Length: 252
Image 1 (cartoon, helix red, strand yellow):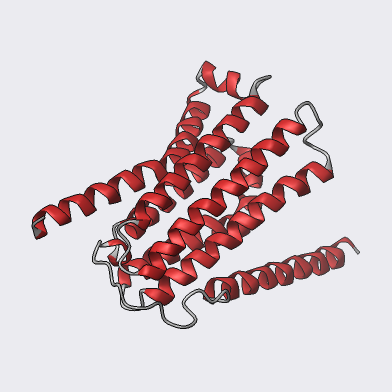
Image 2 (cartoon, helix red, strand yellow):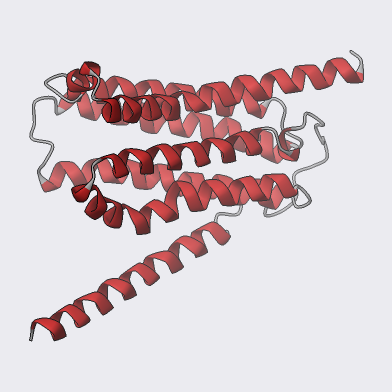
């Protein structure tokens, strides 16, 4: 196979992987567009079939993401990155199937109660922490890949930290104009997709497989994304405490 042919194969795998990864985000964007337009289909999705729809949507998203990660593992630049993405694919599938089974088991239950909210928040938390781990290992094993690092930062900040801080403020604005919430979700999903495209077409997945032994510490758990997330939580807690203090002083 010539160099040109190899580049074409790598490019096809990159685009296929990104195409699968984009499926859940595209579904979310379409739903937000339907909601803004007042399309009747949105009423069906938000009505009695909402639980079944969310269940199937979550399963489709899980399968699509796992396929994307597994596909991209074949064109990783080095062994550590290849193994990482294959393991991430398996881990995400295990979480998704477990969530699906739990959802089926609790069909008909009141999803508004605290126990249910905590249960499904735990699935999101585990997925989030696995993603932080993935981003850190990608950086550690591709130290000269600038595009990979930039993409990882976009996914981290726009996919997790910005929503953490902004979602409550957006909800308050949405009380004044509901379309603001729709636009917010569309923008977030669009930027995350941009980051994912950058990541999957970056130097870490260029197909030039390095067969040298995996260096010591390649899979170390702690990385700067965990550190950033911890500082973000502390910052949010400080702001919340300050808000309560100021509010209490005003009320007095």
